[in-house]
Image (tube, rainbow, N blue to C red; front, side, top):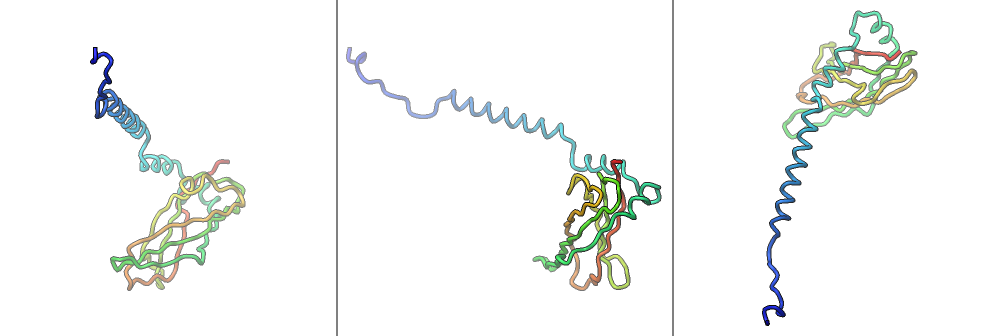
Length: 170
């Protein structure tokens, strides 16, 4: 009768059901995240889809709209040396749409040129829709990008902007 009325000893340690539940939960969450990531197109696929519908130089729409896009370099552009002896440039500019059409895709080329107008380094940047959804008529948007890998001896005399692709809504 003492065993019936006596205190029962509690088990020490982890409950096996609790551990199994945690493992199953972690596996389910990982599988869900993996499935969602596999269904989403890659950044390169998304960029290619945007770029395929752009008007390029020589088309009537491109020529008509690019004359209304003004890109200027801001005075906040900086050069910064890194630990490898190379120089990075952080270029800041503004894009102004002085036209009457809303731009929903805009690709620009930024080039650092020397005193003889030879390109030292250049980079193509998809500004709209990656940095901004669209550029409405009369709107001014900022643009910031970095160009890496300059040598200390490179002549970095000027920065040149050029529109290389666009698409309008209306």
